Length: 82
Image 1: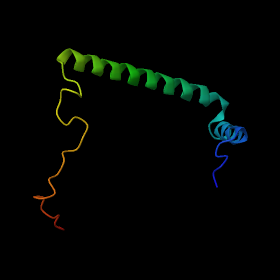
Image 2 (image 1 turned 135 degrees about the vertical axis):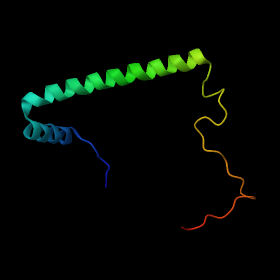
Image 3 (image 1 turned 90 degrees about the vertical axis):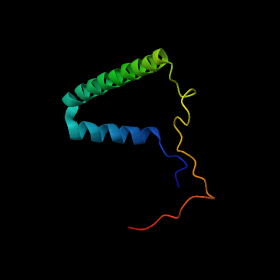
Image 4 (image 1 turned 180 degrees about the vertical axis):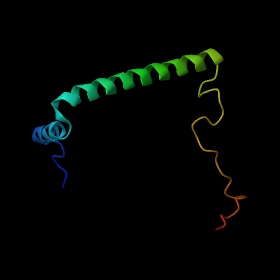
């Protein structure tokens, strides 16, 4: 069904629809705003990594970082409905 999921003419149709909806004047402004937002996100993520590195806390030193705690199936109580 989706063998040829995204062909060049699909992109052309999307571009025409975007220009028709937003107009050719607003699209460059929207792209510029999106670019600025991504740059800010990238710099903030880099700053957070540097802060973590300065503190000495990384995912490898924090136990269970990024993982849900494993439940002991032998002693786990069944969920009750409320």
